[in-house]
Amino acid sequence: MKKRILWTAAVTLYLLFVFHNSLTPADLSSQQSGAVLRFAAGLLETAGVPSGWLTEHLVRKTAHFAEYALFGVLLWNCLRTYELPRRVWTLLEAWLILAAPFVDETLQLFTEGRSGQISDVWLDMAGAAAGTLCALAAAGLLRAGRRRQASAGEKG
Image 1: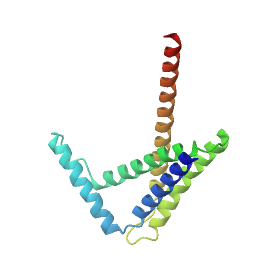
Image 2: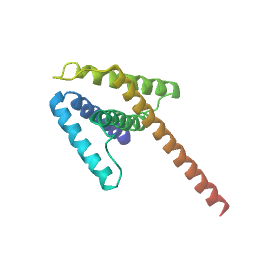
Image 3: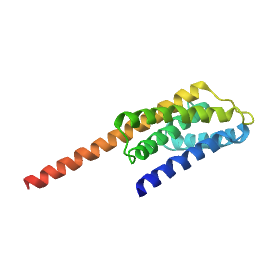
Image 4: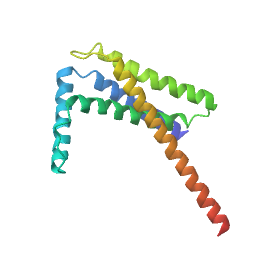
């Protein structure tokens, strides 16, 4: 029960953070993206990698994908704490992976200088799906490792 509360709170707080970002006026959001761009370009240049290809647009789109990939990981971990039939769990996960980006981009319609983009809804959904698949793969690897340890313990 404690895990369920913890994961539900984590998903809720994270979505509030994401939605807060969408309510940031365009000029401030652009300043933040510009700072990330300068930081990333500096890292690349320090590593001897040319950074001319890195743009604010790429930084923003990567942020969308990464932000929602983390959402997918958190959501998967949250939903697995509930005792739901697999079909209900899958449908709920899919619905939330659609609903959260839709709400996120809708909020931008009411934010100064921002606009909601259907392409960002798709990008966000792809990020959330990728995060979910990563969480699923990590859980499978952990289960396989535990099985190997258990079978090695039985043999030893």
